[in-house]
Image (tube, rainbow, N blue to C red):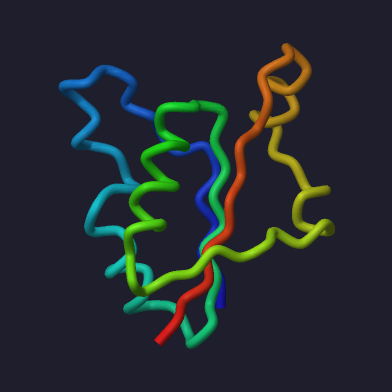
Length: 99
């Protein structure tokens, strides 16, 4: 019903960006395992990676933008709390599978 990807390794160096989990082929893989209207929830503190996530899913005809439920937003990871405590915000997005 859902795939949660929170704070994946951003591979920040340009030559390593090809190793990122959320890349061109990810929407097709996610679509294969999700039920109809299944959701992908994404979180990262890395703005460059977040832009890539938005681009990858935004260009996919398999997904549409969705809202992250408030009750899910209230749940934070240890990593997220640590970074938020240092003033580094969390970027989040949700995408719904469409047919």
